[in-house]
Length: 364
Image (cartoon, rainbow, N blue to C red; front, side):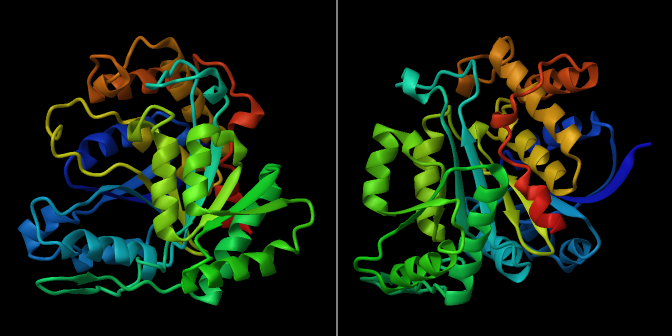
């Protein structure tokens, strides 16, 4: 008997609706029953309702088990449009841990690929609810712009605990605290909080790396890292460096997890340059749906999705232009659906699945 879950779907702007449509299609191919509730947010909502975050969209969040999100941005709406949506999800709903599993799938060969990248498998745990995510809008004068950042003891400690728990539950060897504590007070607070928490985890190796050094190490040998925990802005930038080594943002999913709420989104933005052309890579959105299934406790079905994605990428018959092919967004989604429905894929090695903590954190 199929299990049922109620899921909010916010496609958002740009390519968001295109890739989210494929993610939903793949989810529907699994042995899980869903009630999808679509909401209009972002620039589309601003144009239609005069508000990027209508009350009816927010009300749905209290009723659902999870939220699948596309993308919002500023290109055709005022600056505050995406900020209002993302602040609501990250801060108001307190989805404080942004988990970004970044790994290179067999069959994908990015530019500048070298053999030492073949086993690239790093997880970035990014603080998602404070730092620049808080409602400190900053100031803009004719000759200067100012943005404020706040890092609290509470916020730093709980993201450190999340990262260490992740490492323990997944059998990961090391957690690296990445900051710039030598000259930024907020980062000094972040590192101090991490030290306090991490010393309780005796089986986990700990190290401390300045963000500029971490960027260099990621180019030279990204596998020097295992799990990275950092304030919001560094996690965003560093994961971008890693994503460039796995084939691009079209392959990069994420989970944004709180104690009582979680949403799942591809890391990419709205990509207006390819919006409507039907060539956006939906894999990041599909894998975000896979992370959502882990959060919902549907590990077996989640594993089917990842195995199907891995099989499609390994075969290389269907690829969107960003991966060197000529397939459409929907053709890529259809290829994954076919694998899921027919079960035509090899089981993933246990070490390839780094995302079960999403479900475990939810149930603990």
